[in-house]
Length: 135
Image 1 (cartoon, rainbow, N blue to C red):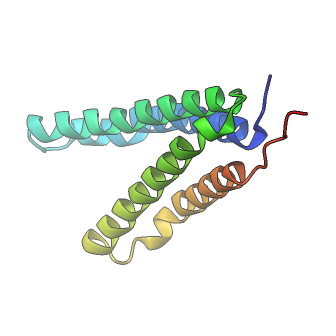
Image 2: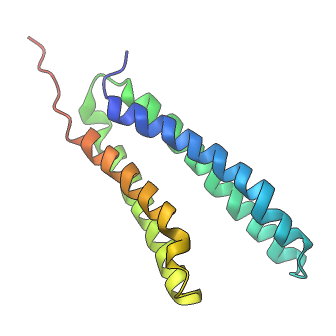
């Protein structure tokens, strides 16, 4: 039975993000890297880093779906905050990398920013959910 619909929504969205991230990489980014003159070690690194993020998102999504069903909310609150911090840290790395490597490319990452804001907002709303007291 679902106890926290915010976490359920976050879990479903995160699994969808995982799938779209993997598909986007396989169809657009990774083929460009593979056909470039970049050395094999760099191609391999980009490939596995891309898929690490996809798998992390899948694991986060499954975790949030499981957390949505846990009756004792105090057992999952810390985990939810930790995952929110991980997402904010990811965005900080993206923002910092773009600022360092391509200062004019901020608009290219606007969708990522919006998604992460939505994602973290839903997590925070889920952590603020009040538990029903057993009578």
